[in-house]
Image 1: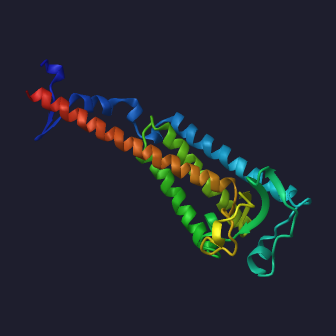
Image 2 (image 1 turned 90 degrees about the horizontal axis):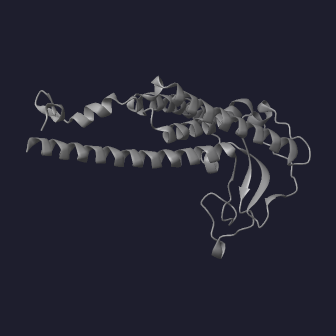
Image 3 (image 1 turned 60 degrees about the vertical axis):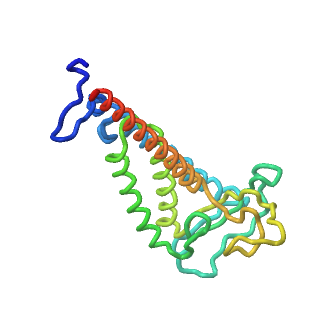
Length: 241
């Protein structure tokens, strides 16, 4: 064993040379130090937010056949306010996707109705947590994770915008509109037996897709960390023989 291959001693612990090389790899620097990482995060966030807000604007200007104007104070304070009825708009034939205007006073899938202030505060804290996670908890090389965080931020801010400026979230995507559960079964809290009774928007898609991608990348990172630890142990064992 040459001197350059020897493990580096630090007190009573031995750190294989491979670990020190890994630590000096610029790809292992915290993401906040990388312009490319910031560009990825901001680019995905800006693109996702733009698509979400534009799609909501288009939907409420077009789907009913005339512009549907929302007055924030009326949405918040008038219990009798409801969106006007409009004819079915088939987006994808085969009963795969309809456009249907809905105001959601809760979260994804209508959870937590009439908890607007709670969701505003939660989104603000979640945004700060996501930015800290990006800056301190990810590395330069973790591009997919940066994309995931950007998608989550875009979805959260897109719905936050609606809650602040409209008093509720604008939804318009309805999957499988004519598909029914068998035997008259119903999802809890729903009056009909639709297979997918919820109406959602692009922000919801970004949130769910971003969280799914984040879980996947976290799993892969965990596998990578375990593999590196095993390799380091093997290197240390080989160096000690």
